[in-house]
Image 1 (cartoon, rainbow, N blue to C red):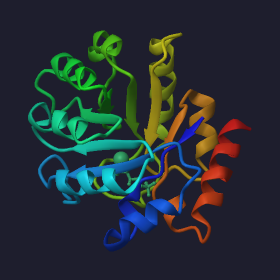
Image 2 (image 1 turned 120 degrees about the horizontal axis):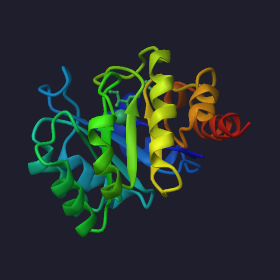
Image 3 (image 1 turned 90 degrees about the vertical axis):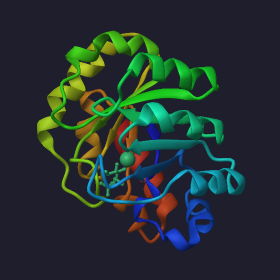
Length: 213
Ligand code: DX5
Ligand code: ZN
């Protein structure tokens, strides 16, 4: 069980210090938004390059952008260990996943809550992770969508015994993480739950313990 806190709700003027608050995290989840794929604008490649210089933590980049075919490889080249593109935006997901892996990064594909996995079953063999959105992408602090639980189960079944991580993102908290783990998720993004806690690292540990319970 891996906990990958999102820095979307952290203080963007003090990101190095904010990342230092979560030493127990398995990775730092960085939400990149372009105001086209989602109606919000966050941070881009220069910030990720700076983050790379200020932490040894694994960087888990979630690209909520149009044209990931063009942009995603640059994030891998910047030193991110994992790069996630949205299948709804990718023109050539197989080619893109292979390109990411060639740079040494883990290749990951994201689905919005109601995007079906079945048309993309053949891509799974090219991936190290599937990210399933459990809210509509774009903002932190939204309510977890229970309607996604059956899809967590379906993706887990399709993955089978392959070493592909299944990450859920959106509305993950102490209240919802157990349902996600029970359905088959093994990697959990939590933004507001971690960064609104007084002791962010204790929340990371509590989330992991709850997922394991
Ligand atoms: C939303 C982002 C998430 C978000 C999670 O579009 O992809 O990573 O920051 O935040 P919470 O945990 O608050 O839903
Ligand atoms: Zn995210």
